[in-house]
Amino acid sequence: MGKQKIEIEYPLTTQSANIVWEQISSAHGLERWLADHVTEEDGVFEFTWGEPWTEQDVRQAHLIEYVKYDHIRLKWDSDDEDADYWEIRIGKSDLTGHLNLLITDFADDDDADGLKILWESNLDRLHRASGL
Image (tube, rainbow, N blue to C red; front, side):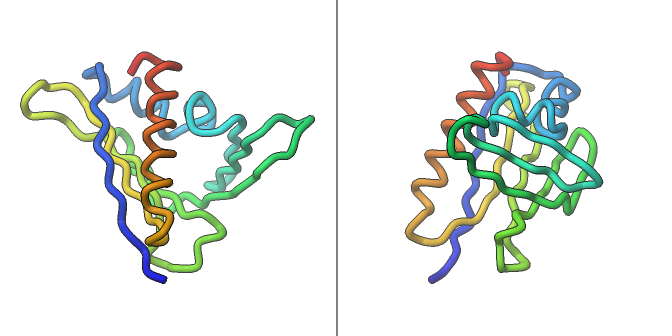
């Protein structure tokens, strides 16, 4: 089964890279929109979905690249392919001057649509939680 590279561009309502960077690069910021609980220690992020009194899904991702105010790239522990990663990048619209989030991720061919929907849902949560 092959992998598809998924790229999503999400327009933001701010011109402040500092505000956006806090939401995408820190455990606290990611916890506001990407998972129910996020911790980070020595470049290892632990993402938890679900409440402690229910069934939880816990996954770890290793930080593989970090360029402040530009992008963060992580790799899930469960990904077998060396080329698989997920990345959140800050881009700027030439037309409006506002910032965009550029998401890159990889999915099995039969999971690509579901992963796109998941990212779009998470980006909606980001907007509701932070107004971005």
